[in-house]
Image 1 (cartoon, helix red, strand yellow):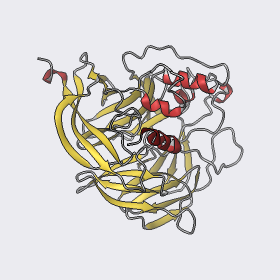
Image 2 (image 1 turned 90 degrees about the vertical axis):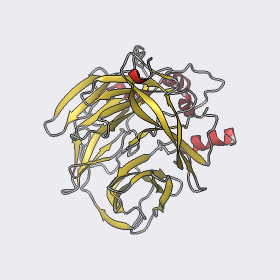
Image 3 (image 1 turned 60 degrees about the vertical axis):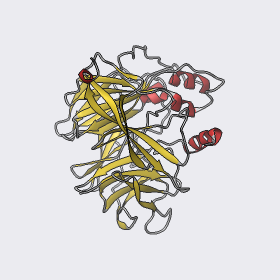
Image 4 (image 1 turned 30 degrees about the vertical axis):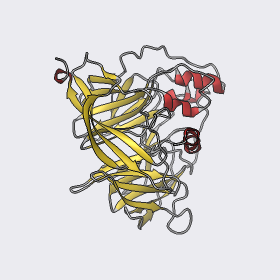
Length: 408
């Protein structure tokens, strides 16, 4: 593979998405970089998945969704090159369907942002920045329905409904279906480096009631320690998941804790969920940083990029990037973040930390992991990965184990 061509392709797409091929058994080994043996739980690499790509598919795989029914496990990858998605059978790693959605016309989605799978006959598809209509297609791309939500009316700051919603609908902030509600994450379009914008009026989550077609905001705001301050942009963004109790589990990229919001009783809990060596002091800005300062700061800090709930094993995986030293000779733009080493904090169903793993350096990327029946799938998409190839995507599949099985 041509290295510079690969970097250009990542730079061109720079959104947050993924792709694949075939299970292959490997020698049982841990995460190479090493599990923290102070904890009983570790991750062991058991399998690999390699997906061969066609010329209509980009290898970034930043926006993926997992779904299972009684007979099938599938992975859906949003394919921005065709304004659609690819659907794969995980048992065979074969392409089930490739769907391109029209950009205009009576059944269309202009600039597809993301999807949510209810079942293979009902896949919600969302336009970028616009939720004035939401369409449903099946896994073959046949349009089933389009509905028109009532205008979104924020709790604060605006006197009239707003048509533009910077919803994310990606792997780190997925749009999730719970109790007939679509729960969206949004990032504001205001200036994050203006500290007065970082206040309790902000709401990072909202839902669409599929019965009433009304939007409602959730009280997911900036934590108190951050309000009326400003820090690196990525540190002020959040990621989320839902557990089986319908609780919203979320965290900010630059925070050492997880927050749990119970929508049934409006109750919040906070749990420490940090990487053990993450003892860096928070750096607050007094104004907008220049591009070099921002890149140096972002590379030099811990960033928690994903929180994933594993319903099969009743644990949470908090994926993070560890710091690297900024080198102006090689770190030119935001693609440098894909060179940061990746780790994982493991928490049990009560949010107690039970494990910590460093994945092998120069192999993995901290965006686009997902959970299936076989374990945690982590993409080998570091820009420094020696086997990086535009024509395929590789995953390592990790399973939980006890360190008692490797300590003699």
